[in-house]
Length: 475
Picture 1 (spheres, rainbow, N blue to C red):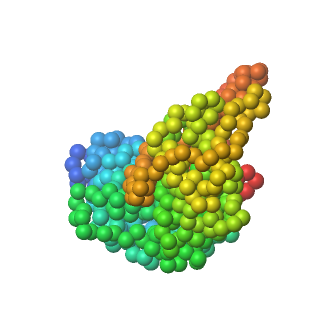
Picture 2: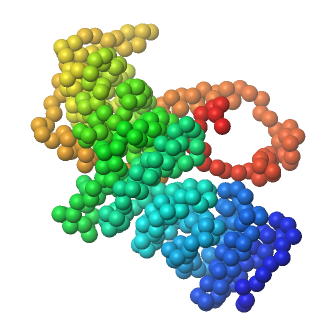
């Protein structure tokens, strides 16, 4: 079958019809599959400027192939050919389509990302992000997303981590700094996530080396290295990760942020990387999240506590005036209370929580003879606070720091899992109650199209990832 043909198109519908014909090819040999893929890439690249104007159009075009009989019948071979194309292709239009195919396929089938790692795609993505930064903005953002997605589901190869240059890390920080006037810029979120996942990969390599890593092989954490040397020039990144932690509900991303914060607060050269006001915001966020986490979020609660100690002990917060001292002591005391309302809220106190809370209350500016401890609950008035002796918690000598860094590094969660929230559950309960009291609107009342139909974006319902930096009232 001959695939190398020229097309004369009159309108957009004809473009989609011709694309359907290309991906519907029945190929019984690798040669015919290669011909079909070449036709697909050539056809789409030729008409990208005419008919593919949005990310939705790119996604639609990618799904035409991924949902085709051609792909279904030869998945492994087609995936590998697309990966090889990424290693060799230079045309921005064709690269955009290749990256989209790998991104959308990988999100549904992790084997694609694993295959990319085996074929050495990571360094190719680093190269494209760094050297092709002046190409199409949509391509650049999708390259960042692909690098993040393939890196968060597996351990990267040691030789790839070693070859990441300082200049690449600095470039990512510089892009964020250059966009500091617009926190809703679409580049903020993907770049921050790439830096967070690279930091985690460095931590895993340092504290949980793989079977192919020699004990003497040490990999420098380039993210911490750059912030240690030039942190004062990259303050916007610090502001944004605190803002992101404040708004993020995905557990895996919260853990990524907490891992970086832990290293920043336990590395002397980055103790004072953040502005003092940002640290105070972080304290507020941590107090709220520790109170709001559900009983099932024990590992995440432990990670928050492991970060809280160096935050209070090492940063500017150790200097007067001491921010939220009473609130912190009250929270820590509540977390180790037994019986009554507090045990119902936080659950039975496990030994890890007890040890981590004990470490926090031993921070010099928190530790005094008037530490707060919960007293009895009075009906109608909530918990009664009494002045009593410090919490009686023992800390194993000399083990706290070494244990924490390994534990923080080891915490993982599957992508897409959301952290439960007591407040959200309570608000949802109230909303459900109100919904039950409202009269139900029937499909017959829908006067904007067919019953039950929702029309958006010219008749199509579109889905687009929303940046957590966007807030109500901002574009």
